[in-house]
Image 1 (cartoon, rainbow, N blue to C red):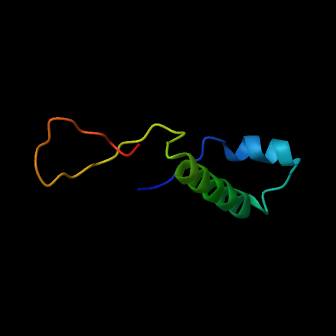
Image 2: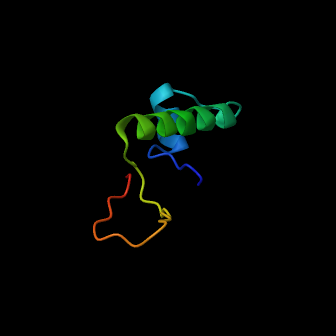
Length: 66
């Protein structure tokens, strides 16, 4: 599962007032780490993505973790 940030790199750079491209990789890694942490903390996703849930047997009621 790859994490995608709900905030774009350009939006983050505008907010941080960063003009150059030297720190793009660092800023992007911070965005992805913050997104992953927040999604786990709130037990929800912020960006639409496909998930796979494997069950041992068919159940009448299925409650996905997200």
